Image (cartoon, rainbow, N blue to C red; front, top):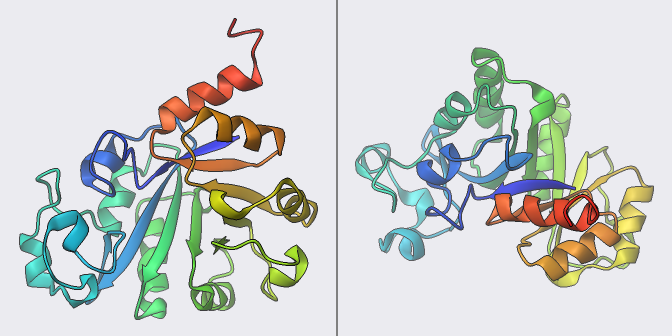
Length: 239
């Protein structure tokens, strides 16, 4: 079962910070999941619609200007990560990079920049996964850049797995641990999809997902989650 560092190693460092993302490596996880907002023509790593919770600034994230962004520091006292910085940092790490698109006002420009970064840093497309709760983004990505893997995020338990899927192929479904079942996992897997679950750090839930044959989890403490998976999957070797 794959483990993705949820917003980087967010159990150890401020979420989505340079420290949390740079600390990730292939020795303790399969990938890193980060969130993206568009600020003018730049793409930054940030989760919330407002800066208030994370940075104590009463301002909407999308209302930042480039000049304000250039002066802004994260909770780790480092600049807010940009998409370019992420690619430069992990160009040779071998990690899967899951970009969750939060608010992108120009998806065409995003895809142009993304293709340029992949080319510039010779990043393997097999190690890139684009996901979003906004399924309109996924439609555009499929039609304009079908070379990218697409992940559909759901925070609900659909009545029917088949009818919940878009009318184009996707790579994975990302499901909320709060509302899923073994049946839903098996239904999506039977449809040929990878099933990833968020956000999971507790041994009880990790074990349940192993038994349900989930393909991966998003964890705040990915190294500990990987250790627990290894212990649970290979109990004899770890006894």
